[in-house]
Image: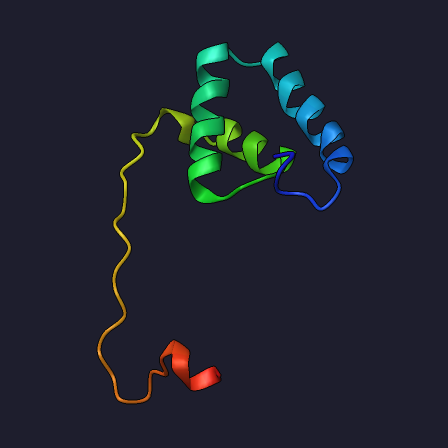
Length: 82
């Protein structure tokens, strides 16, 4: 969370809010919600809270392999831009 901000100090309140969710949820659920949020790229209090509120932390996290781009004649390679 801290590394995702230009100024790490801006993430302190978000971190404190997420830690405050431990008052209403078990540590296991909070940890599972944070793992799911991290996997999805969610970096906000509201995102973690929504995961907990909708019980998505209790759903198995299936890794989805990234699909490669199909070969196409209009796709430009890295040399095109130099």
